Length: 327
Ligand code: NDP
Image 1 (tube, rainbow, N blue to C red):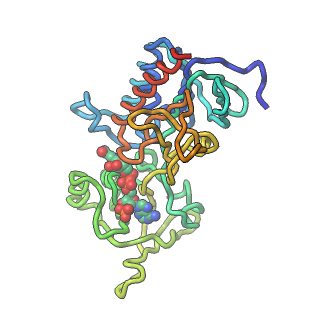
Image 2 (cartoon, rainbow, N blue to C red; image 1 turned 30 degrees about the horizontal axis):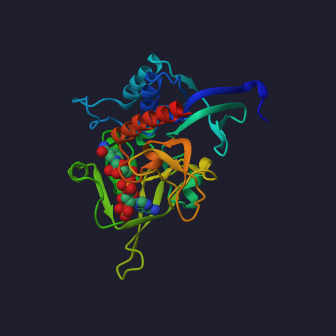
Image 3 (tube, rainbow, N blue to C red; image 1 turned 60 degrees about the vertical axis):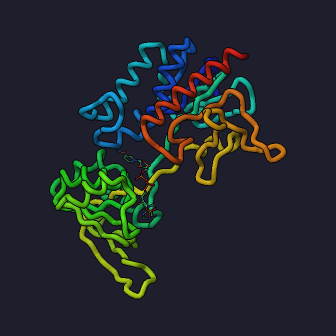
């Protein structure tokens, strides 16, 4: 139940504290929109689960992601962004101004809302993954790698994230297995080379994980090689840690009753803009949902890069400003 006295009226409300959210906040505050940014549980967003950012322009020597995100946050603060920490539990985009409720308690009424909620790591969906979560299963090497110094770990996945995590863990651990379901890595060439040239990393191509084993914590994994093929074979590896790096799911479920999303849950926006559509189509056509914009990975199934997220955050704020001025 929302306390009536806790209704806050704002021009621009931003949900999410990754590169998209912070950049939107910098632009919106410099446009005098006095934005409120809801920070959520993972301050700095997904980027802070990486080790070093090497591809964000302006940092020729790379930068630690916490510093980069803190810099973005301070830049937004300097121009007047207000930060609120909490989880958005409910929205109502059927009304104007839009309603956003934080922790079931604090209600905001906003002329414009910018959704920048990012994406979260995917899990395989096997039972033992849940059993051992926090006891050897992790989706963040940077957060948890430290606990596996001089131990043996496995990383699942063959994309850039998996390669980056495997390389990072190889710097700490005795040995790193990469469990890759295809006969090749999907990662960019440079990341593949780093993995393949690292003597501590053993890539197990065409393997899938059946289950994790161990008493109270991960001690091993049962794998299957080329399932269903004539040379199908079982393999057991002894490991202390099991790291998932198999992609992400956009954090958009909260908005499903109001805005259009694709089959994977990514928010659909109007061509070359951050403008959201209503989830119900009228006459087979998408209809704009005025005042609601989406930026960053929650609306980007293709690029998923910090620089792209930051760029779309800037676009969202410019579009929100234009919309608010039109009211
Ligand atoms: P990707 O979707 O690129 O890769 C996911 C990997 O996980 C693939 O190898 C996929 O296998 C595998 N996978 C998916 N589901 C399963 C499953 N159920 N069982 C086993 N394996 C599975 O995700 P990433 O997170 O790696 O990257 C996302 C985006 O971010 C990409 O565009 C990437 O380039 C970018 N990125 C860039 C970085 C950088 O530039 N520094 C760092 C990290 C990410 P399969 O190939 O068979 O589909």
